[in-house]
Image (cartoon, rainbow over all chains, first blue to last red; front, side, top):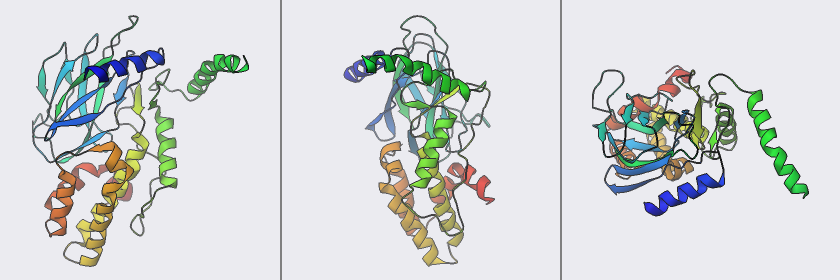
Length: 137
Length: 168
């Protein structure tokens, strides 16, 4: 992960103020994914394009490397709708389960989901916008 | 030297182009690897134009890519977002065929499942979907054995846009 993080930071630096983000996933074990990327320091919503197939049941995200301010993440369905409430992460190490925006249930229906993310705007020079975590889905 | 001068102008040109189509919900600049809504539409159009698999008879891709659910917040979209939509629509069309043909036209249902199986090797399934448990493949395998219950769950969750566009 350290090499990946370094690569991400080098790439981000090479495009100056531009935000370069990549979300990748490798399976640590079944239905658990290492996820990472960069958010936008201006506070824009970032819609990632990698979907993960979910057979139904609970889902959670643990943030192991957070941005300089704080971050919020949710799950989006294929109809461009974020179906979960946004989980808010301050610092690292917190694992939060996703709940359905419609009824608060922890049971996420079978389907295909991608990550929506944003960070609180941080105008500081070189603000850290990189994040990493573990997604269970 | 000539290239240096041109490269100096490039950010200004990009900014001018970005601002020309700007709305309140669009960010002022788009970082590398990301798009605004116009970029999503362009990617969608290009994918539709070169789509390698057939749709069921009587079904066509929508002219417009999906609009964002929330239009009041600046949003950037990772590249692939337009491509995703075409393949998701295509998969939904064949899921619909399989579910509607179940029990009444086994040949049609079988053809629909064969098409979905072909899609397992598509650029969408291989580059934009992560399915380490093989949930989708298992869903298709069960459907081929006559149990379309899981396929129906995916159709319910994943095909809202398809159903809205086709009136299903």
